[in-house]
Image (cartoon, rainbow, N blue to C red; front, side, top):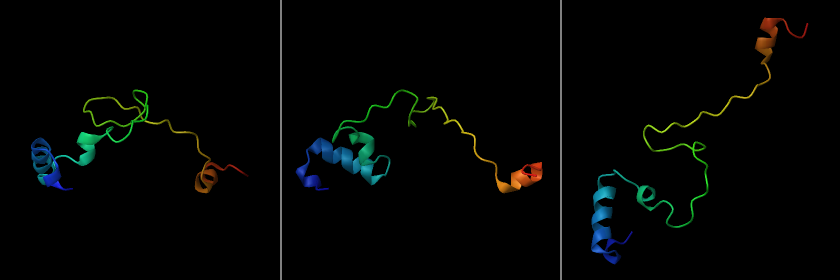
Length: 75
């Protein structure tokens, strides 16, 4: 990134936050280069502290051979 081609404000922001590694480009510029996709509330992880993010439901899986042997299934 060429700081000399940026405004004074942009130079100050970039040198402050990038130098001390408290922010990344995406932290400040997300949604600027393209439109963000529509994600309904509660369907995506969040970086907002305290917001509830539901866990995906676990689907039923086929039993393992060891579990089948232990239960006596298949005899």
